Length: 406
Image (cartoon, rainbow, N blue to C red; front, top):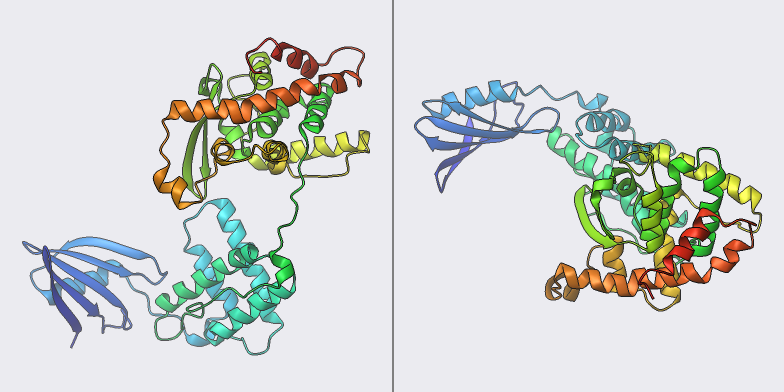
């Protein structure tokens, strides 16, 4: 006899069913009776993916039989075969995520499996308990990892444990349920200084890219990252039609959510864009990995030629230049965060501050663009000392003096 529990819902009766057939192996699914012999079934298949279908049946028994056939449940694997690497592999195969996310999850799982191999009390995935995840997190703390890094490392492990508890119900418990991030030693809460290039160093780097072989392919991208605070992925999406006079429409994706903003550009960037003749896109690269490798290679060669610059930053950190320079002058604030595309952090900013776009753009020109233009004009003399002839950067900075940016 089949077991189900019926409850009245708006729009029809809903049945919570526990299958008794071999194919369902005690799994739960739900049936919602819509009327006119119409049913809606919802349940998880053997891979842990949720499935929803509509079907036609005259009775609850017929609806359950059709549901079992449609969902196609597969008998669960034998408990002695569910080792941690098997379960994690099955979980990864069930994901529908971006390639970068998949690669990150795979790396996090590899680190955890390496930790599991050192223990003797975890042979099967069902052997894992909450204490093991807490112990793993504590080991990461002792390794000097930050709390945010530990949270990222445990995301995939907790998600796989939750998925396994649904996929093999009754055989595997959710080991991540109740997990809490460990407290860090006081020293690890201290904010570490984030290195950044100054605008003067960026201008020297741009000078180098003007003459370096292949430097023109990334020159405009570097300028946009350093002098307008754009992310790598935002630079690669840019096309010439996104520029309207001095306003640039920046489109990107942050944490899998679309991000669009309009920002005014420094005069130097506008002149760079005007002189760029290599097509509608501002860089010839389409993927951030290739772009980042080329920028990093040029940066390393430039630093070999200029020994005084000891810092080596990945390409994605070029956008730190603007907030660092503004912070040093006491100008970093809410407007700068909007300029960089950061989300509101306080309740006041989220729910109470309401500015029309035109007013926000005016504030960006006053508090971000104007100080940048002043800094660029102030380093003109320094740039001239490196060459007898004016470089493109120097020439453009001279042109900036004739613009209304004081």
